[in-house]
Length: 238
Image 1: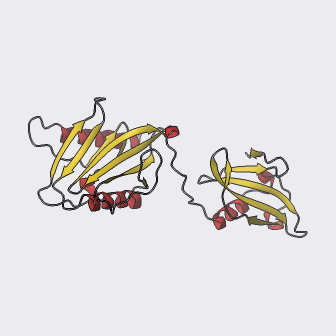
Image 2: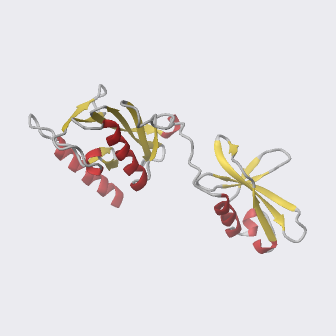
């Protein structure tokens, strides 16, 4: 309820700033789509004095594009905004809303995208950002997560994966005794499991150095799968 209340308040604020009739449009402090929101460009970046703002509705009658013009450096403004979103709001930044990539902020004109998980797990909140020499525009939307092909971030180190496996109970892992009886050794590199990146760790009996089991840990959520090295099949634990 707390999250929905916050989203409703942000939506009300956005509606109030957008309702200007024939008066000059004022930029919102947040971009809101459904129950999801992110701070606006003008909320996170200090814009040039005297910049101009306007917003337009797309052909679908719902999608809104927020346009900031009269800027001294459109690319620099876009870069500053994406850096703030990445650092403070857990957004992933790429060049393309569908596939990710790396945005080139050295170009006089270009595009970038910021994505973050949405309230609905099946959706992703996307900010499509475009810039020219003296302008920058932002278009927020919700897209189906399944339609995105961004690479999953490698946010888990090998050391963290080992520590996580050691924290699990031997019974859960299909072992006996205590985890102190085993050595957990990670493998370098990424293993793919149904298009999901994973880390692989092997568990050896400390006394005999004989391998007991191999496990795959999905990234970044660390779901554990028991790997059958003979068949190459992996079965989820739990």
